[in-house]
Amino acid sequence: MQVPCIRPRPRRPRPDGTGPPGGRIPRRRLAALACVTALTFTVSTSAGTGRLSPGTNTAGAGPIALSHTAEHGPCMIRGAREVQMSEGIPTSTGYTRSTGTVRALTLMVDFSDAPGQGDAQDRYHEFFPQTREWFRTSSYGRLDYRPETPIPGWLRMPKSFREYGIERGAPFDPGYRAMVQDLVAAADPKVDFRAYDLLNVLVSPNAGPSALDTVLSVTFAGNPEAPTADGLPVANASFVYSRQDDGSGSYDRTGYRVLPHENGHVFGLPDLYTAEGGGAVGHWDIMSEDWGANNDFLGWHKWKLGWLDAAQVHCAASSGTTEYTLTPLALAGGSKLVFVPLDGRTGYAVELRTRGGNDEAVCRPGVLIYKVDAEVDTGMGPVTVQDARRDSGGCTRAPNVHAELSDAPFTPGESFRDTARGITIEVAGVGAGTGAAGAGVEAGYRVRVTRE
Image 1: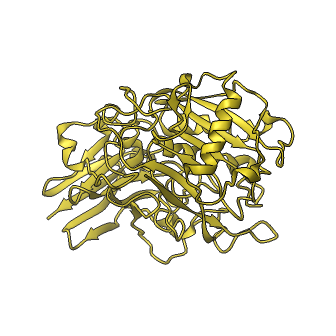
Image 2 (image 1 turned 180 degrees about the vertical axis):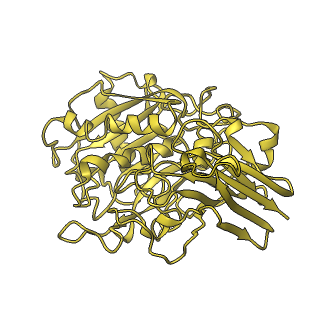
Image 3 (image 1 turned 30 degrees about the vertical axis):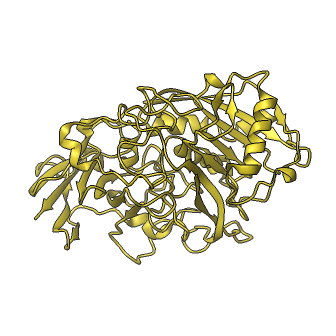
């Protein structure tokens, strides 16, 4: 069984290239399928083959890659088996591994009724080397993402784009199954699919409608029922269609970001936007909003992906008051994440976000607090950012950034309280102690967690 993840789509920008207040293009109506996952996966302590199909590999995104100790046990929340793509830790098996060297087979595809315009390598360079650098930066160098194009030109499909019937929300059958089968047959003489970890299909952008009208880009992740290539299912594949060009003139800098979002699914990450758009998480994770200015993954996702060590993640499960010093998520090293479990499926994550690394849209540095629910499925709001300044309108005017949540972080002297659960999270100050007067945010923020 396959379950679609709903992807909202934007409205057209104004003729001058700007969006509504805050520079964000609003959502108009539901659009494309974002990912398709199999209902069940083989139960295993391994994570993924590091090839196109699900299997076993000690470097994968699952339990073996996740760095944790016995003390992290209460924070390793889990969702029910019926949750297709969960925020639970560790990540389910079947997805592409997210540490070490990952080889991304990248094919540029066109059709008789949508022939590739210009050199296929121009299409390739819309996404690379930016995507590779994005993952290198976000993973602190732990993911060596290597795109490869064994077929450098356009790969012509035997049917017209219209004949495949690709549209919003289309499952793997029948259009995509036919298209993948034809793609494999066309590429097979020059490609050994067994040599790659995931598949990127960069479709000629004149195939289908503009992304401003309908976002067709889609990922099929962890799907053992996919068509096969060289004897293995094409289980983790991302398809990118028209250009996410909002008319603001920033496409050359930001247009590639749809691909790291889609590849986030092949690593097992769910969509964080909902049917209403990006109002739950805003621009604090690329799995929420992949339009506009650059932004990183949440610290919770970095732990899921194996990019944080056990010593960088703190589980605040005990009663009483405990203080932690968090360093900016954008910088390598130091403590990055405090998790406050509420029960076996939910909890609050706490991290320090600043402008740096992949986070160019941060206009108010501070401590980001968000609730994670492992039993809420992809595209239904599994993560909710706690807004320190509700209804403020935000602090950014960058195009296509969810403005309301842009000033969500808490700053020194501010606190978040869940009265019902008896939990208080306070930003106690800057630096390692009281003698840190004048220290910048790079020195870290002291966070005090109290459980009654």
